[in-house]
Image (cartoon, rainbow, N blue to C red):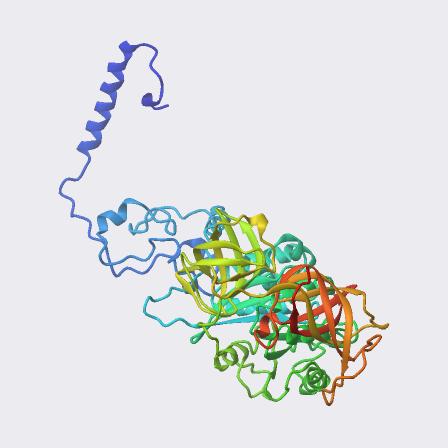
Length: 561
């Protein structure tokens, strides 16, 4: 054992130890070559690639370019002597010295890989200060359970560089361990454990990606019929809906028949105010389909009449395209297997859509989707109209709390002001988190939104087995608000073709009829007439897990004291 490491028994021994060390040092100095040439590094030497790097990724050595780990790429300005001091993680032993002694044993490779994986940060594209703000567009993915909504979302994020390859490889490994190999892409959006175990989205997943011209927020809605209320919340924030249908034999039929979610989601999206619909016919790579044009046309023929009935114009508002979420075919690049489809692939098509005209000088309206505590009160929502800036004073309706905006985050990037259409996180001052409910609305003090309990509305009964009479109770979904409602009176029936109103009051309404009715909610809610503000004037009525009616607010009735 080295004498320096042991504690001396008595202080007298101390000097002897020093003496032996000095002797060792002197003998070491005499062997030094004082006239050796100074070390000059070879700047043009080939880049050093560690042994485990070659074994782990034999195909793409370039893709693992060691930029993320900090100081692996050397810049000309840095002096070499500083560079030598700390060996970088990527190169065991410094990486400058050419004679690098024994190889790193392979056992350390998996450990080192895992260490690197921990340092993953979500990539946020750098924004140039002078660049004009890209237009924000919110895209909601809707459709039947297992049509492939989350997988397509995950694939788009990978193709646009928002999720890096290494993260996906990690998901793929974890999914393989659970015997769920084909699910790994959807894990980019289904982040909590329950969603991953069951393979079903529950909450509305959020992510974003950018193209050359626009900034998109993906809202990944759940397809299961138990979670339709969550899906309505997601659709109410969207400008554009992507209806995903599965072309696989049997799957399309289940999604489209009476109890399927394809019909209900398309209808709810229209009610939520989505003007443009893209129908992605997914799973075209499935062996039962094999990119067949006949199957694609068959799905299209069945859907078009239904979308027409819901209120979409198939020529102007609806665009069909085939794709495969798992392989990524026809999402960013045209698919070779699909020569009969001549249109643009999905992402370029989104980029080529015309701009939405939004007025930023209107009154501030921000329906709240969610809230939580984080160094103050934080709320989430989409700014429907007007613009919000830092330190602005706003009013929270219907409770008329005056609040101040402390900070603004648009898609997790901090900004000073926000335009309509952006998904925002606001940190507020002057209100507690318990005092806010989803469905409340932020307004500016000069122009408050209307609130009340009683209103007249035109409703279309979509699906209800028996008749509906005054006194009928249902759940009202209007913008982000969910409230119990009662139909207190039926005022008149409206003829679907001519729009004429009946002279007498109906005693009941049944399926497929249109009527004007008076509704009264259990609590005070914020709402506007459809004519003044469409986003806050359209609603759906649901009961027993089914969507019964859709409607629009015609008139707000003042409360009688």
